[in-house]
Length: 475
Image 1: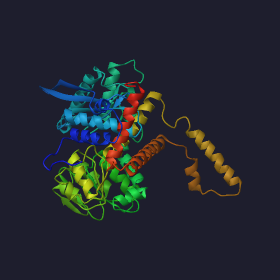
Image 2: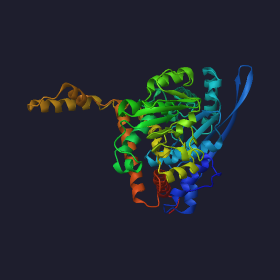
Image 3: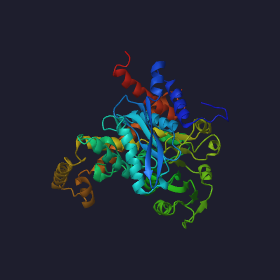
């Protein structure tokens, strides 16, 4: 797993090279391996939109990497740097991610070449609806074929516009709300989806720290409490990851990086306070909290810490800075934050990487729950909540009738029926726990597997291969 020092490869090639290493540990026919590795199809579209007195032309893509399960699933990214190779790489990661965590979707991804900050809300709505129409008419959006979700530059409002556009062109489809996930709750979304990726990162870290051998391999001990954490990217994923780690796990967030500057405080920043400042000022410069502003935020990637969490862009850790990384653990909350060349350096240094293909899976897991909710046309918890409360109240009554007093606070906790958010978080936690146990079992029992990434990729490839084989692609 080594490359010449001057041979950094693209994001797509990094994904494919990891695939090749993982595939070498499996008994899969060459032809089938190549089929799984490559993207099945890509749709490129160009369309005009009148903006003011001018007509602007936009270009977008929707890639389907694998349809071994339907629908294919993956976000839509609005960014000024997005390109076809990036979309294909992200689609491939979605296939492996879904397979790894047992979410029955194929992998897909979309991208629109645009800088959303340059357009007002009404203009963004027109552009989004037009892009959605182009995808709908080619069956690249649909509850049973291809289901987008939010990604960089998109969120609940864009998903609401897409769902409404789909309904306009498919008015007889009673499952039209299932054509996208990540919608507002008032429009068929699910509680917990906004925070899902960040909470999934935390659940993944908790499971890592439950296993002493994993923690020791990173040169650490104990749990998450008190661990020094640096977060790169304080967007949706970075914000919820750092907020939950700080408030629920007692981790110390000592550094925050944004593209236009970072903040370092060895005593720990106030995540909520610094996030609100960042949103209001579009950056961290001028923040008056304890600590110091770091103009060259990339330097914080190399700062000493226990856990470094890249939660924004791909390729932020490459062969130029990998040897300078002082973190014990890199928790890949973003897609592809570590390049293939950097991975080789980190493995040699003994830095433990918890891979994106696992740690970033919280979003698609809760999207799966939302999709199920939309198809079943019922809110989770609606049927059983009061039944569970009544049953638990009878249990408490039986305990107290036997002469034991149950404290009021405990009684309230036991008797409370499950809300939708409780079930979503429980399902996400279970998903991340089960997946990590499979990854670590393969890592620790296969000598040829040298990283958790390759362990995770080999499991995903194996599952996709088994799906194709059982459907009769070859005897």
